[in-house]
Image (tube, rainbow, N blue to C red; front, side, top):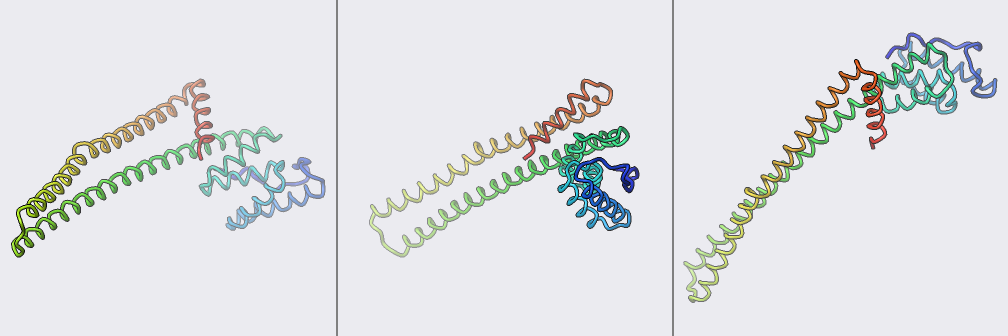
Amino acid sequence: MRIDYFYPLEEENLSLFAPPGEVRLAAQSYNVALALYLEGNESQALARLRQISDDYPLFPQASHLYGVLLAGEGDLEAAYYYLERVSLLDIEDEERAHLEEELRQAKSEAMQLRRDRQRQAQREKMLTHVKREVARESILYKVSSDDEDEESSSDQQSSSILEDPEEKHKTIMTAIIAASVAVLMLLLFFFLWRPAIVREQERRIEQAAKLDWLETELQERAATSEDLARFYADYQAWQLEDQP
């Protein structure tokens, strides 16, 4: 965003947003902040402008410049807040024209940032599902291996210790039941749980792709239709309000 139309304030440029003495001091502080930014002292300028904007919310030039600089720093949500606040104040027509363009740009970039965050969250969620699958497979494999180890140990004991037929039958049945449970768990995982997980992942990926396509088409067509432009602006505003 441009800042070349911001200039040091003089008394004739000021509105009465506070008692006259405070208005002059606030304007002087604003001029210092603007000079600091132009000299490359961005952090000091931002800190000073934030203080002025919060102390004097009816001081339009301070909130306007602060919002533009925040957008340049990538803090789009805060930038939109301060710029929208300025839009409710009484400002000159030239400044309002710049402000409206900056609001549209900040809103568009904030929406794109939100979509990027949603995609990242979806990727992380899918990765979590994959990790869970791996963990389940590892647990099932361990259960199966433990059952095999127990069966092997039982065989070794049976070869060294003479067991009566009843105890030998119980040992064999226990081993069969344990092996059957392990096989059943593996079958449930591969033929029931895993396909359901894969289908859910595919469904979410498909929904995200459809939403991306719809938003892209809407953004492109809004440039040629006032009705679509208004609808797209309302949609973007709703997305920003809905954002946690």
